Image (cartoon, rainbow, N blue to C red; front, side, top):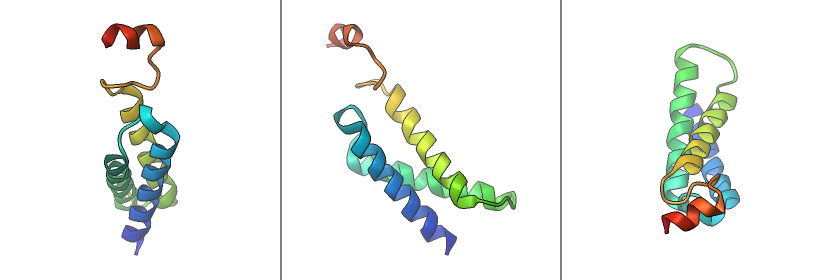
Length: 89
């Protein structure tokens, strides 16, 4: 049962990440898939170590993974200033 909870949570966070990052972030489907996979991995790790709050850690793992990918990707990093963007194009 927790599997579906992690999957739902990761899917929602992936969608939310795409909604907030818009054109600067990764596309919708990869964002949802990465969010779901990261939530499953984070939840599985917490369950493996028998810790409490597996949903919370699944959400943190999913959010952190998507933030890292969106912030540091090569195509259009979120935190690049305008001068660097103009030089790269």
